[in-house]
Amino acid sequence: MKFLFLPLIVILLGACQKPAPASLQYRVVSVRPHDAECYTQGFEFSGKSLFESGGQYGSSSVREVDPANGAVLRKRPMAKNVFAEGITVLNHELWVLTWKEGTAYVLEPETFKFLRSHTYQGEGWGLANDGKQLILSDGSSELKFIDPKDFSVKKSLKVKDGGREVPQLNELEYVNGEIFANIYQSGKIARISAADGRVTGWLDLSGLRNQLPSPNRADVINGIAFDSASGHFLITGKYWPQMFEIEITGR
Image (cartoon, rainbow, N blue to C red):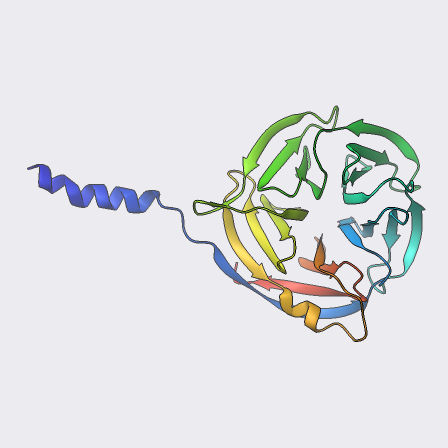
């Protein structure tokens, strides 16, 4: 009789297995100018406003950008000893990470006026939010969910594709329970479940860099901004002279 249980066990094990990540596709909807002098670190829509942070010591900045033509509408230089990283807007406040300085700056979005700062341990790479918490990447395979009141870590998720951890998580964008993350130096974006850290899809955007006009000094792709009005993403990279409006398919 014990052999009769084997097919049932196999069925149950199969039911418990999570589906493999989807192979996401995209189409380019439009191509727009972008400041080729910006070493893009953070990229995010807040309503109709598009905010961007640029890195590098001595030239880091936070700016508001016209999403239609890439024009810099406002710009706040950061201190020369600060390397700006990811940004996000939560509770009408603009948050700016720093790479190795262990400080998150909070600015007023409308004026870029300094409001306060918080300290944290480790490096800061990407930043997003789920409407209640901040979500931080530090270049590892871990995402940290952070209380904006005191910047305390409320939970952490290991990002995995099957049983394999996915490191080099960089710029982030949260969309409807999923986190889209640039994988540094790869040209790929991982779509991640915000509930359990599982990679549910891969999007290969390495071809966009090949479409940039020459000559250029374009570095890696790094910039994901979701436009809720259109349902499309705006994508750019470090020192890219263009940004691409794309529609993701195959979801």
